[in-house]
Amino acid sequence: MSSVTETFAGQIVEKNRNRQSLRNWLIPTITLLFTVGCSESDASTPDAGSEDLSVSAQSVVINELYPHGTDTLTDPDWVELKNLGQSAVNLSGYRVRDDKTFFTLPAQATIPAGGYLILYCDDAPDGGASDRVHLPFKLGSQDEFYLLDPSGATISSASWNAVTAPSEKSYGRLPDGTGLFIALTPTRSARNI
Ligand SMILES: [Ca+2]
Image (tube, rainbow, N blue to C red):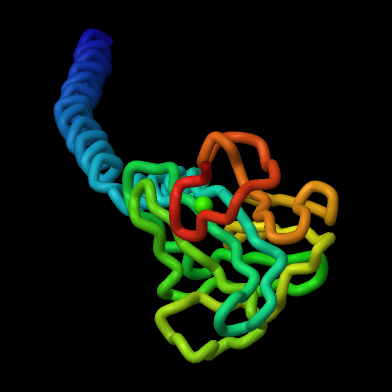
């Protein structure tokens, strides 16, 4: 009877040893896995980069537009975008639209930090100047314009008519970049005044 007890006790001890052994193996292993997991998380700069890009793109606004162009080449309609952020933004893949036509912005649609990008609304894709960004539509005297991110969400928009944007006037934000839209003297690629 006592030998059975001893044997039983011996098994208990052995089990405890196994548990201790398992614990000795598990703790450093779990610690290692946790450390690796944290390292992978710390190394996930692509996510952080995407987040930064998103934040930067949200800092782009429609700053001014001119819907009274008289000539596709010498006096076209245009939209001025402004980057309010601290780093350059590439809007490739972003979209714009008026009241009916969508257009995906090309690779050269970049805006330096604090800078401007002019979208020429001339309905002339080559336009005689390939360094310009051309849109396949013109602006109407009563119209609307939207800047959309690649998911289709609106980043910035403006709508106007002959009263709010009268002849020879542009329609832009004052103060530059942040204010409400009012009729202005056109300042293409320059600060609204
Ligand atoms: Ca301007």
